[in-house]
Length: 363
Length: 203
Image (cartoon, rainbow over the protein chains, first blue to last red):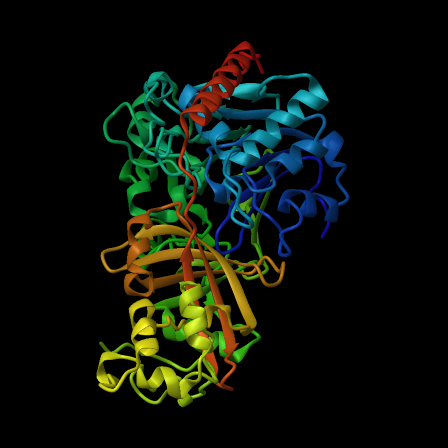
C-alpha cells in the first residue's frame, strides 16, 4: 500500500468481528486516530500496524488521538498508540470527567482476570503514559458538543456530542457495578450509556464526514442524536458525504433525521460489526434499513463470526453438545478505505475494500 | 443395622455390600480405622472370634464371661472406605476457557470464551443453557461474572475413561469495607487530578 498524497483526504475504517478503529489522513502528512482495535494476532493496535505499513512516522505524524467512548470494542490498543504518538493530543468525552467513572477505573484495578481484562484498564494505561511522558494528569481535551478539536485551513474537526446535559449529569454513569460493601467484585462491563460518546464532524473545504461513534437516539431532545439534531440549529453545517454509522448500524442508534438532515442523499455509509451478544450487529433488519437509505453502504467484515472449530475433535464434540450455539470471533480486521482530494467533490471519492470488507447490498 | 458401602478397588465399584455379610470379603480390601484403643484390641482378635460376638444379627447365645466382658467394652469397628477423591486420578486436560458472561437470558447465558490452553487470542461466543451450570452457582449468573470451563478426560483406577465437561463459576471476592474505602480514596485523587487538567485548550 502507498500513503495518500499530501492533498488527499483518507478515512480508513478497520473492524474485525468485534472492534472498531479509524485512521484519518488530515492532509500534509498529518494523521488522526479515532478509537482502536487490535490487529490479527492481537499484539498491536491496528492503527500502528497500518501506519507502519504506509511508512508513516507515528511519533511525528499523528496529531490527534480520540477515544469516543469507553467500550472495550473501541479502545483496545489506545494506550499503545499514545505511547508511540508523542505529538498527539489526546481527546476523550467530557462525560468521563466524572467521579463514578473514576470509581469504575479504580475498582477495575482490584479485579484480576487471566484473559478477560476490563476496558477501564486501558484508561489507567493511558493516564500512566500521559503522566510519565508528558507530566500531564488527564487528556488534552474533554470533548463536548460544538467543541472544535482541530482548526486548520484545509480541515476542521468538531465534536457534536456529548450534550451539555449529559456532561453535567453527574449520575450519568451510575451503575450497579460500582463497588459496594458486600457486593461481588465482578469484571466491569461496558461503561454506559452511549450518550457519552463523541460524535465527530470532519470538514474539509468541500466535503463533510460524519463519524457517529456509538451514539444512540437519546431519550429526549437533550440526549443522543436528538440533542445533536436539536443543536444543529445553533451551529449549522453542511450535510455529510460519508457517515460512519453509529453503534454498528443498530436500530436504537439510528434516527431518520441523521439521513435527512445531516447527510447528503445516498451518502457513503461505513460500519463495523459487533459479534458479542446473543445476536450480532447489524441485524438483518438494520442492513435492510441502511440499504434503503443508501446504495453505498459498506461493512468491514461479514459475517463477523465463523464456525467455531477446535483442533481437538473431542473438544469440538463436547462443546457442541454443551452449548446451544457457538461461534468463533473473526480476528482479522477488515478495512474500508476512502480517499478523496481535500478539495474534491462527491464524485471524486474512491472507496477500496481490503481483508474481507464488503458492500452492504451484497450481503 | 446394615450399612452399605463400596469396595474401593472393585472396578465395578457400584456393588453395595452389607456390613453384616462375611467380613472376609470386606477386610482385605477395606481401608479402615478404629475409633479407640478398645476397638483396636477388639479388632486384633481373630475374625472368627468377633464374627461370633459381632453385630446384632450374629449374636451368639453361648458366650463366656470373658466374652461378655468383651461385649461390654465392645464397640463396633468403624470401617471407612477410602474416598474416591483421594485416589490418584489421571486427568488429561484437553481445553480450558475463561468465560465472561455478556448476557443472561431466561434459560441460558451468552458468554465470551478466551482460550487459556494456548495463548492464541482465540475467542468464541457461546450460548450455554443454564442447566449446565451447577445449581448452587446459578445465583452468580450476571453480566460480568466469570467462569472457567475445562474439558478433560479422567482415567479411573478401575480402567475406565470418562469425558468431563466442568463449568465452574468463579466466586469473586466481595467488596470489603476497607477495599471500598481504598477505591473511594483512589477515585477521589484521580478525579481531582482530572479536574486539575482542564482539557479545554483551544484548538
